[in-house]
Image 1 (cartoon, rainbow, N blue to C red):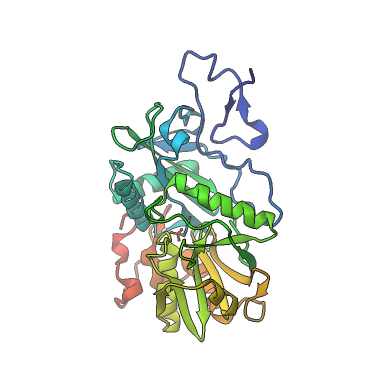
Image 2: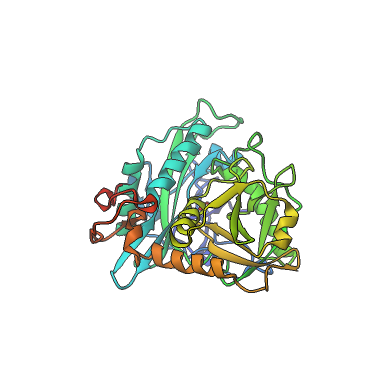
Length: 380
Ligand SMILES: Cc1ncc(COP(=O)(O)O)c(C=O)c1O
């Protein structure tokens, strides 16, 4: 019988452990859930999604522990059935201020709470407590580069049997270095043959681990067909979103994005883009159902998400978008976003939670994108 494979946080693929833990051990068999660095490179996958995952510490159920102790059993319900929900949060390193800024972290934890509600799960920490834990975790790891935080709540009992009720909910958080998830220099997309999961199948509004099989099928199909990313349609044929991003298009100088009822994850970056477009360009975004062929005649398209950031699209299904280069509005949003997340625009400081030191407090006029005071950070 082959050795059971055991993945541990903090180990590179080449040093993945296998061996006596597990079947021969009197302890429950062990397996870690967060090693995602082992996929083979796909043809158009031009970015490395993760860092080396060499976190020294992780957080499990509110406690910071050495990464090498961060284990869960192979029988864990969430592992068998995808019964978990999670978040992806970026922290941007600014070498000028010697700090990392966690971007809209409180909103991410609010969404995690909403996902938990939908999945009948309990998360025993408030968003503010989770923010404080995240800061402490990043500090303990001593990161001084761009990072990605992954909190996850999952059905933790070691049982066979599909359900959501009557099971223990555990929670972990890791913070690891992260570069670009997809290129931000102009990508080629393909409309997927896989349809987006419907709210009545697996709620797209919740960030559910099991639901990402839909994304994975679409992403792999797109990469194998030579595209950088997939665009998924709803069962009705409306544009929904990318495999891990929301979508915007510019037509006749107007900004459009699929409405919340078209089975999208209500992205925090989507909201950020809408606020930047309004504040910086005076453009209100139209949230509406979008047809597939509108993609082909759009002047500009871009995807957005925490991982993807702002990723302009230059081709869809081999049709050139606009003149095949990054459009003016897309370029401006890419540039604004890059500055805002790194703490170079004080009028957006309320979106940032610094890890190592306080942000300078500046009085601002209260506006839509400025409605939270700095005094409220880091645990705003
Ligand atoms: C399916 C899907 N849609 C959209 C998004 C964008 O969401 P956000 O901007 O909150 O990261 C993500 C990323 O988490 C995603 O996985």
